[in-house]
Amino acid sequence: MEGNMVDNSSAVSGGEEQQNQEQRRLRRPFFRGPRRPKQCIFCVDSSKVIDRDPLKLRRFVSDRNRMLSRRITGLCTQHQKKVSKTIKLCRNLALMR
Ligand SMILES: [Zn+2]
Image 1: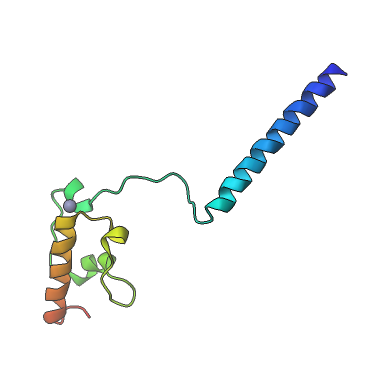
Image 2 (image 1 turned 90 degrees about the horizontal axis):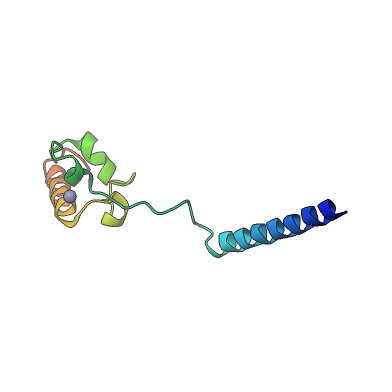
């Protein structure tokens, strides 16, 4: 008997926890795991250089060849400026659209 009661209480508490989790999930529908700090790839690896290579610059450009914002690229201010300047230069040189 006692064992059964203990089992029931634990089951109830588990259910509450699940409900809480459900509520949390519903409140933030686009929550995908813990936030991880953004790091500028050029600051982390100093050997990387921003050069006029359309293939390398592709990751900073959307599929419709529009520049991506810093929020998406995760670059720091200085490097984002450099990248945007390089992309504009490449457009002028007809290396990329
Ligand atoms: Zn940087």
